[in-house]
Length: 136
Image (cartoon, rainbow, N blue to C red; front, side, top):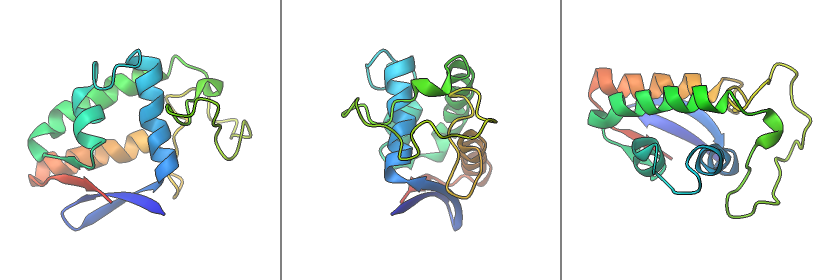
C-alpha cells in the first residue's frame, strides 16, 4: 500500500509504508541517538503520527532542512530500514543509483522525486493555505 501526504485536496506521493518508516528510523538512529523526537519533535512526533497542524509547518520546514543537512554527512550504506528490526535491509539491497551519494539524497518517492523536496512542498503548502497535513 502506498502512502501520500495530503494538504486539503492536494496529494503528494510518498511510497510504501516500509519506505516511509525507514526515513524516520534513520533519523531516530543516526540523528536522535535513539530518543524519539528529542531533536526533531515536530517531524518525529507530530508528522510521524500522520497529522501535522498547519501552525507547525514552519517549524517542520526548519527541522526538515536540518535533517537533510545532517543526513548528508552519512553514506548510503548507513541506511536504517527499520529501527525495530535492525537486520532488515531495503528490498533493493545496495543496488542504488550512482546519483545517491548520501542519506541526504537517498530517499526517493515511488514516483521518482526526492522525498525532502516533496516534504518541503507539503509543509510549505500547509503554511500558505493554512491547512493541516495528513498522511494516508
